[in-house]
Structures are given as structure tokens and as C-alpha cells.
Length: 390
Image (cartoon, rainbow, N blue to C red; front, top):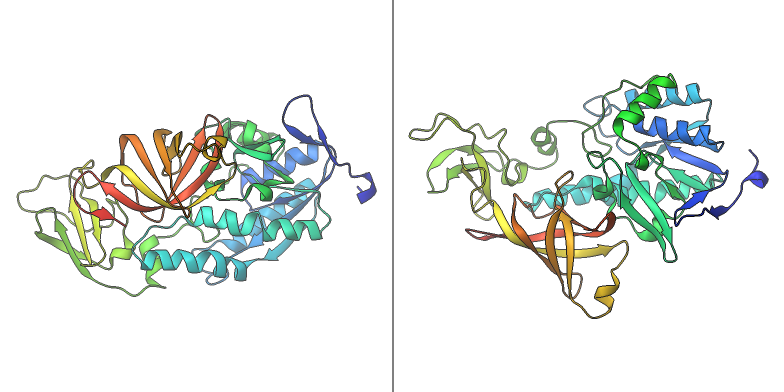
């Protein structure tokens, strides 16, 4: 399809803005989701091109399966008869995502690289590169929906709530969603697998990736140890009794139960131990066998760097308290909370029910009904017992 035959956006009878035939560049990752995204757009008659984004080159021979992923993406492109380009964004990723990722861990926080990656890579350099290729739109295999209104795109949860990925898209600027498509937002994962199988896509049985954005699946502590120095210290119970040793508070997170190497404690039950406090100053991990220990539970969470995809009119109208539904981790059920909006991007959430294992550095994502409004970084957690975690 030549550029002269590419039509502009048109309005359907609903409030959803649907594209006419256009040139769409798809981020092909090698997985089945992006493959079916390209398939659906091609079946709809669009001119489709693929871009495979390389954002990590430090150790491709190790955990990161970039070569295998690219081979899978290339096989899909050949099957669909679409061009595929391999583009290196690793410098941008390292500067804007990975350095922040390490800095947060070094401070004893638990960052979310997927939110940072979507904000810094997938809807900025990728979109700019696609436009240089003459694209009218870009598409990814995210399970989410976009709906157009007079103020621009609105981000909605996917129909399949189990696969919904709006949580990871909550840090993207509203303007960056212009010209973006999420064809899988109306489908279930079962539907996607079935379409891939029926079309004979070579990766229709490929396992879903669950690793860090663009870095792959790996043992987090071993990975971090390549970049952060070990700082061994004691693992103690809630009474201060030493039960073992850790390799560095930065390598653990609130609520963690695996990898503690604590067992056979005299007088203790044969049950898992959980990290209930990360004492960064004292370089101690505090653990307990109660998975809902009061030090793990919180009703109030302080936030920083509040980001709105669509700022609710109630706030601009002078009401500094907003009833929302919130997720503090991916796939968590929506939690009722009141957001107290403060100055300079600071705010706080007050939950109806105590929240377990809220971790500074992670993100609280805001919803009203189906719409994802934005997010903020968790800064301080007021546990039901003990000190404030920050």
C-alpha cells in the first residue's frame, strides 16, 4: 500500500475511534500475543510492518533470549509475509530504565521496570522510529483498550481481566497513545491462542514470557548481584532473634517467602517465613511466619510523582479527595480507596481494607470503572504495626 492510499482516522458510530486502512508498525517480540496482533491487522487489510526491539545487549548469551526471540519474530514475519526490522534501543533502555532500576534497588526500594519500560521505550522511541518508517499507527500485543473522546485517548482495562495489562501502561503519557492500537483488548488469551493455531503461526504454542521487561526470566538476586555489591547482614524474627544471614537487603522485597534459607528454627512451626520489614539503615531483614503480620499490612500509603493519563475533573473542581479503585500490583483485585491529592505530586491513599506487602518503589494504579486514570510511585507505607517503610 502506497502512502497516498493510506486513509486518516475516521469515527465509527460509537465513541471508539477506529482506523481506516493504514500502515501500522507492530512491535513483534517473538511471542504469540504480538504475532496475533500483526495477524489481525493484516487480516483487516492494513499494511503491516514489524519491528523487533533490542533493549538489552549486556549478556545475550545468558538468561536473555534475544536471539531466540528474534528467530521467533522472524518466523512469524515470514509466515505473514510482512517486513521485519531489528532496531537497537539498548542505550535508551540502559539510560532511562535500567539505571533507575538499579538506583531504586540500591536505596532498598522495589522498582517496577515494566512500567518504566513502557513509559520510556515502547511509546516514545518506538513510536518515533515507526513514524520515520512512514507509519500511521503502531500496535503492540498488550491486553488493554483505548477509547477516543474529545480530550484524547482514554485507557481502559482489557475484556479479559486475568490478562489485563493496563497496570503496566499507567505511566504512559496520554499524548503518547495517539496513533496506538491494542487489537487484543477485546480478546481472551484462549481466543488469541486459538487464532494463532488456526492461522498456522509458528509460535502458537510458545510459552508466555514472565520475566523483567526486555531482560528476560532470571533469578533476581543472582542478576542484581552482578550490579550491586553484596552487603551481608542478619535475618531476625520479630523479637530480634537471629535466624540466618542475608546477602543484602536490596536483594529482597516486602512479603517475600522464597530464598530466605531459614528453616528448622527451634520452637517455631514448620511453616514458611516471610519478610515483614526491610531495615535498610540497620541492614536487617525481619521475618515472621504470619503471612498477614501487622507489619505487612497497611491502610495508608504515601505517593510521589503522581501521573494522570486523564486527570479527573473532580480534582480540578476543588475536591482534593477522590474515591477510586486501586491496584498496588499486577492482577490484584481492585481495591476501594480514597486518594488525598497533595501538592508537588505528593498524595496519599487510604484503603477501606488493609493492603498486604505494599512496597516503596512499586506503583499504585488508579481506576474508575473500566478506565485507568494514571498512577503514582509508592513512597512511604504506614504499616499497622512498626515503623513507616520508605
